[in-house]
Amino acid sequence: MANYYQPEVECASLEEMRAIQNEKLVKQVKRVYENVEYYRNLMDEKGVKPEDIQSIDDLHKLPFLTKADLRDAYPYGLLGTDLKNCVRIQSTSGTTGRRVVAFYTQKDVDMWEECCARAIMAVGGTNEDVCQVAYGYGLFTGGPGLNGGSHKVGCLTLPMSSGNTERQIQFMQDLHSTIICCTPSYAAYIGETVKEMGLKPEDLDLKAGIFGAEPWTEEMRRNIEKSLGIKAYDIYGLTETSGPGVSFECEEQTGMHINEDHFLAEIIDPETGEVLPEGEKGELVFTSLDKEGFPLLRYRTRDICVLSRKKCSCGRTLIKMSKPMGRSDDMMIIRGVNVFPSQIETVLLKEGYSENYLIEVDRVNNTDTLDISVELTPEQFTDTMKDLTAKEKALANAIKTMLGINPKVHLVAPKTITRSEGKAVRVIDRRKLHD
Amino acid sequence: MSVKQISVFIENKKGKLAEATKFIASHNINLRALSIADTQDFGILRIICEDPEKANEALREGGFLTTMTKVLAAPISDEPGSLAAILEVLSESNVIVEYTYASLSEKHGAYMILRVDDNQVAAAALAGAGIKTVDQADLF
Image (cartoon, rainbow over the protein chains, first blue to last red):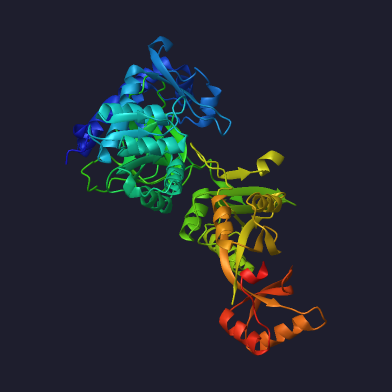
């Protein structure tokens, strides 16, 4: 197999990887302590000196960084080097009201693009491929990251950005795109549009898709694979550490290999902050081992997942993370029950509905309400009321079985739920507006 | 002897029914009969028109969710007890009526649209009682 971008790292032995990580961590902690006053203060408060960190076994001694720290330190407080050494800014969408601005030196950009190159090669990408990047370009990391990775692999790169879906499909046909990169919700929309245009998956040359930047389910993966005639792979990342490519799926499709020579991963108990052993579910924490512009140590992602060093058939030894069960941000507490939108999506897709849905949470007379609107497909529409109300009831029951709370299900006409070209908005929590 | 009915899914939101009927009008489709069933969330608009295939095609292309069903159209005389007589015949033949609604045509006067579980059995039973169900063309 030759589908590694940097085999010496991707297939390194555990000892080799440890050695890389130990060396980088010691240097990085020293550099951050010297250059980043904000983090130096956190370390001083905790009574930790750079000399206390001799290997990754000492990692737990370092203080955490949270999104609140990023907000407090905005915009320059966590800058790791002189601004004149930085060449790029990327930023989060700020949908949660807390915009993150990250700085990159040229070395940071190269490292990030190499991570994306590893992801592209892992799905079979070579310099013979045509890689269509339909992630948004701009401040959002999706487009620039995969674009850079595609260049590094040597693919013919189509920097489409998102939107103008019919044109996307036209380019796919005319220029024989073989790899598509975008958000999973946009991939699903492209699949829908392909069908609407009277085309079949066989009319396209696509073989693989790299989809990330939002949570998606196995059911959605199967739908996308079918509608575009491809294998669909997950990619993970966050602006705080770099962007997409922090971890990526290989042909085994059983979790994402973390580029742990750059991003040291830990799983902690989100309540106590205690480090959990491999295999236990908890909050993912990343330490950037060689970022210069925005070097975050022990950054709490609020993504809930599991790490595993189980041997992978692809030959990579990089530790794997499970698909995040949802950011702890996405989790809603409805009538005292923890609910992730991905749980609801799993039920909808299993029951034959599409991934176009809207979850609305509100509080009426001091009780939380959960309303779920789903689009009816032409195959599901029948002429009698009793069939349709039975469908609503069956779906409500299935969701109740999964969550333990009763939702109100609304069947709506196709195409009435707004489609997304980037990250889909699937949850509206009106309780926040009242409080 | 049956008639093709188009059912259209209508969300229970302001303007949705107007939108559908406006669309039908703009495609020059003349309605002969119509009924609406509704719940809190959605309704089903059921229509009988002259060229149902063409109308159905247009509605689908217009983005509406539709389905076609075969229903019976039974002429009914303008006197007390005539609907009861039809329903009694069907009941005696163990035909289940899902729903029914009334309309008028110039040729046949008043008639009932009937959605039943078995069109053949129902049409035969009605014929036996001297009630001849009509075809699409007879309604226009």
